[in-house]
Image 1 (cartoon, rainbow, N blue to C red):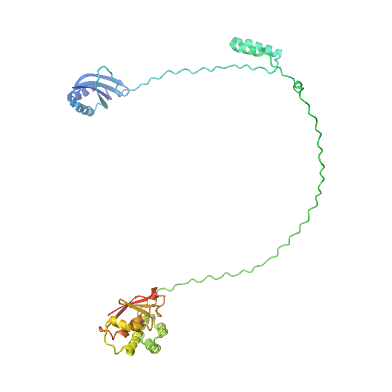
Image 2 (image 1 turned 180 degrees about the horizontal axis):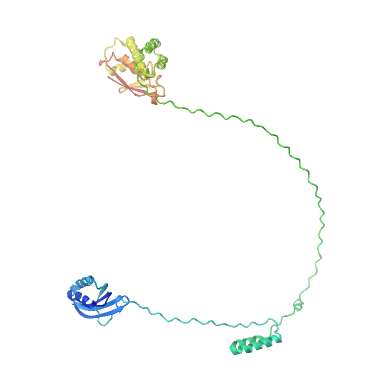
Length: 369
């Protein structure tokens, strides 16, 4: 069994002991003593109860559920020692305050620098007698100040009697300064008036004409201009292999859409003529053999070429210049006319992979059967 001290705070006093006592009894505890005290914070309740230790939590839960209690604390009960209530208003003792000290006025006697006349002394004695009635100490101070003799001051002549006299210094004669004659200022020459200079305005240079870029026009491919090709073929055959000036003339004489197709036809006519002139009795060959035996030797008469892995590279093509105007169609037609009759398959497929006119270092053609 344990004994607990319950301290609680409530708003009202009526029926408080009955309501809290029911919660205590319902929790298995018995009431030993109680006390109610009115405080500025509310009603202070103190109870001492006794019951089993295992039911302490049940008691605290019942007190917490009681609506009459605003708050509560439980402590182990100690007999003989009164525990202060946790919710009681606190009072603090203040030490007594000492009264403010009364200011004391001190009188300082000032000695006179010269002898006081008799009339002043009589007046001072009379004033001291009047003050004696009010403050005897002040009267004594006044009388003492009048009675004390003033210190004597030595005459000035006696102070300087023993001082040696210095010989007088003759006054220094100031040298005369000759007056400086200032001549009249020289007349200033008048500046000639500036001559008027007339500037002929120059016309502003005309603004440079804006350069208008040619709009891109898509070229519609056309068929070859056979008449133009027939006119240039005799010149190609007669001037072979110096034929590129004739090809440039052909490019400029046909319509833009017919330029590439006309070059292709001119290349086919030139390649066929070279085959009939130099390689007609040859037997059928594979593509690789035809390129090594006939194609590369014939092309080297026109340009610097190299054939590797099915690709023909034409370096520094005389036909293809920078500007996006490729003329590789002539070499494609040239190979078709030269190697077409020699291949066992009877057909040659060639298409461009790159061109010098588009910024490449060489014109590259892919060749297959």
